[in-house]
Image 1: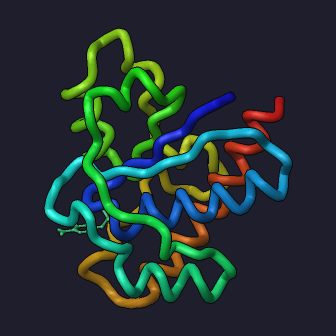
Image 2 (image 1 turned 90 degrees about the horizontal axis):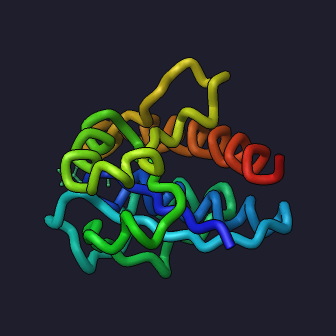
Amino acid sequence: MTSILFVCLGNICRSPTAEAVFRARAATAGLDVAIDSAGTGAWHVGAMPDERAQAAGMARGYDLTPIRARQVVADDYETFDLVLAMDHDNLATLKSRAPADRHGRIRLFLEFAPEAGLNAVPDPYYGGDDGFEEVLDLIESASDGLIAHLKS
Ligand code: 4NP
């Protein structure tokens, strides 16, 4: 079974959104995948997703409420086939912490949404509600691209 870890900074906005969106779409597509999310930072460990992320996700039918924030651990680079970073800062942090022979599995999630015209999911934490809609739009596109990649 393919396993995928989505990673952002806090694991309360972007990566839990990716976990919930990808879980829903992979199930619809009939893909057998293990899915999780984590943050490079530890500030929010144990917390539920940001209320704005929960509300924006729920409005599109994605339930983020079972998710609790955790930090990336060393085992994750061995366990997961793909470790997908939401932005360049998190990509660089992951690569700085992972053994060199695991760097190939650490990639930007938006590689799977070439049509989006962006290669990073902008951090919505300090912005308004529009930011959470953009996060969802980008993550839905990249989820569909990733599903097509995994099926091919
Ligand atoms: P996330 O958003 O990385 O998408 O979960 C953030 C959450 C918290 C913080 C920054 C970004 N923070 O600075 O606490």
